[in-house]
Image (tube, rainbow, N blue to C red):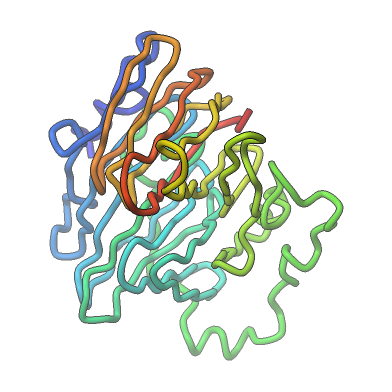
Length: 305
């Protein structure tokens, strides 16, 4: 992973030269992970790596798995773009199945191993906050797969697992920065938390031109969610100006989507699977010039505002 490490904290911009930047196939960092074992590697595109976030996309081939189990220095969030993913925590034995449009939080230091038990490619959008591995490291720490908790181990340990952190969360704390559960409690237990359409945090942005902004996850380290802009009316539908507190990638899920930056009047129209990198503190608008609904997945490292 030495080649990938060359881009850590400096893609698509150098740390002291961050500007709004379209990320297309031409400047995505394309790699397989892990390169030492291509037979069990997943196919990756890295969109952005800064001091507060690492975001991208990976594909898992039909019938495959990634190995060894991965362990990150930060929380990781998944959004399933296509297919079905089975994600496994080899330390606790927890298994979660995710389908298109569903999401999951993999807390930092929790080992995880992904499987595609289907006959179609699984495509995953991911965000890791604040960093993927320890500074100076080009890969995860070694993990002994002989210690994975499989079926026989689970049967022996049944009834001994700790209660779910989501059940222990004080509901009065839930909201921006604490969704869908207490992030500190989840990191302590290492459990995976799944989000679907039923338990997103739903908000509305804008008074004169309101649009829905839904959060899949919102913690002290980062945020992932969706922006949907309808069409029709008197002129193009637009999101009112928004300024985020952390670096962000805006993934075009259903486009084309136009991004406008009023500070320098920069304008970019991106197609499906392309990404807009927006540095922290940069005001922007999203505009729908299409005759259909547009859909953007946002990933933010650090503070949301």
